[in-house]
Amino acid sequence: MSIQYEEPMGSYGGESLKDFDYGVDEPDIEDNSPSSDSKPRILLMGLRRSGKSSIQKVVFHKMSPNETLFLESTNKIYKDDISDSSFVNFQIWDFPGQVDFFDPTFDYEMIFRGTGALIFVIDAQDDYVEALGRLHLTVSRAFRVNPDINFEVFIHKVDGLSDDHKIETQRDVHQRANDDLADASLEKLHLSFYLTSIYDHSIFEAFSKVVQKLIPQLPTLENLLNIFISNSGIEKAFLFDVVSKIYIATDSSPVDMQSYELCCDMIDVVIDVSCIYGLREDGSGSAYDKESLAIIKLNNTTVLYLKEVTRFLALVCILREESFERKGLIDYNFHCFRKAIQEVFEVGNSVQRSGFLDASPPISSLASLKAGTLNGTPRNVV
Ligand SMILES: Nc1nc2c(ncn2[C@@H]2O[C@H](COP(=O)(O)OP(=O)(O)OP(=O)(O)O)[C@@H](O)[C@H]2O)c(=O)[nH]1
Image (cartoon, rainbow, N blue to C red; front, side, top):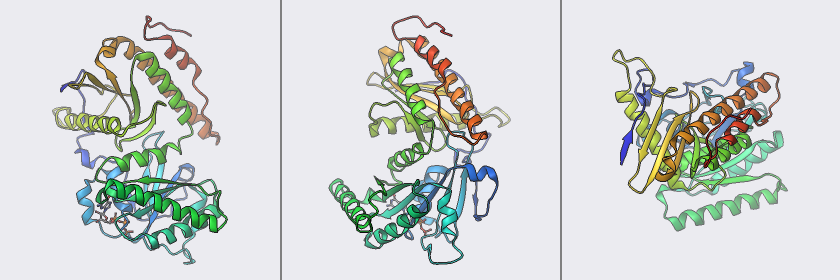
């Protein structure tokens, strides 16, 4: 395997990678600023010790899974503002395991009204009968307050289960949870199930899917990625949020876990090397900036290609070595792709300011992206 850096990369402002994260925990749920109201809210709920805080720390704060063994029990709602990127712009609320809906000081109506997704975490290594009862109580209450919430169930800690046991557990949880909903005449309430563990990439994959459902621009992003890869001879492309390694969009070909893991590993390698060798003498600079770019050639004729798209997003592509010979074309198409993404941001920001969310495709950049085709000479179409 050879790693090639075409441009030097800086550092995350002199901090070690672990110190670089989205924000700080605020042990306070009172925040009535208009900006925080407009951000989608993701709730992490579930029984005590099911793994909620571990998920939040591993995905968004670079905590290593082993360190979660020492996490103390959460006793307040922790609000985490993930707002440094325009696309991944939300808050995560980590609930203590023992939330009591009958406690008059717990204003669940207010909380559910502003919620985009509710993640209910079930410990698959434990007896989950009590968790299923709690899941039913939680989602039925939330659904009555806000039927637009996406309900996501993480069947968590599956690292301790055999493959057969995983599938059996998922089937059983799915069946029982939906039977409970049917008994309560709540068939319209849709639950999505994921098998997760903090010890592998499954938690990042699951979180990616949860976050994607909250991105109104998703169809536009997918469309742009489809056009980009088909005109550039690329097999698979992911648009990554670099810090969390959540992929916020990919082209419409199926995602296989190995490709996703490979791309995640590439981001880790690039950022780690950049943190160590990319700093200026005085320690200033950034590990990820607009010059960030890396090419990794694997020994099976596959090339991994990473390029900066915005301050927080990177495009990571998987392609064959022979397609990479047309690097000029790929770079030209990438240039158009990046421009289109910037237009999506601009549209997103302006409609958000006017209080209306829509995702119209940025026509001009799409046109020029189509213009640089695999077999032709890149040219500009206005
Ligand atoms: N094996 C395994 N253990 C996990 C996983 N995720 C979390 N844990 C462990 O589960 C324990 C409880 O994790 P926490 O994140 O504190 O659980 P919590 O749901 O936030 O707990 P409360 O704050 O009490 O509600 C810790 O010892 C974690 O190391 C996982 O995917 N696999």
